[in-house]
Length: 267
Figure (tube, rainbow, N blue to C red):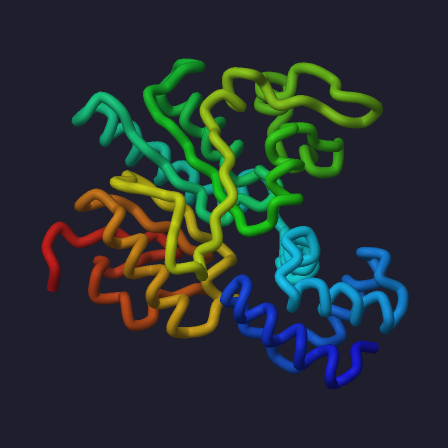
C-alpha cells in the first residue's frame, strides 16, 4: 500500500501535471495500478516520483499513464455517435466540411467509433469530415495509432460492422481498423489542464467524455469555457451522461443525456 507521503506526493504531481484531483478513495486504486505497471516496491515508486518531480519527461509520461483511466470501448453510449454524425452531416452540407474533436481519446475506440458512424451516415468511405483525437497519455495514443484491437474489444460491434471496418487480421486474435476509417483520424498529444493547447477551432462537435470529472473544479470549468469558445455556434459538446458543465453551463442550451448545444449568442 502507498504510504501517506507517497500518496501526498502523487496527489501534488497529479494536480500539477494533469489537473487531476485525487481523493482518499483513489489510494487503493493507485496501489493496484502500481503493481500492474510493475512498480513492485516502495523504492520503485519513490524513484518514479523523484524523477517526475525533477522534471524527467519519460518519468512524467509514465506517471500520467499510471494516473489516467483508459476504460473505453467502441460505441460507448451509442446514441452520442448517432447525434454527432447527424450534426456533422448537417454542418458539412452547409459549409462543405465538418470538424470533430475527440478530446480524451484514450486508446482510440471513441474516435474510431465516430469515424465509423460518419461513414455510415454520409454513406461513403470518404466523408468530408476530419477528426482530431487527443489525450494526455502518450502511451495510450500509440495504441490508438496502431488501430489494432482484440476479439474482446470488438465483441460489442454488430457482425456486419465488424466485418466491414475490421477486415484484416493484425496477428493472432487481433484485427486492423480499415484504412478508410483510420484515415479520417489524426492523433495528437494534448493536456486539457494546461494553459496552452495544441488545438484550434472552430469545431462542429467536441466529445469530452469521462475526463472532466477527474479535473480539479477550476480547471474543469476553464476547460469547458475554452471548448465553448472553440465550438461553432450551434455546435455540440458531448459529455458522459453523469457529467455536468458546472459554472460554464450558461454557455450552452439545456442538455439531455450528456449532449449540449453551444448557444449562438452569449447569455
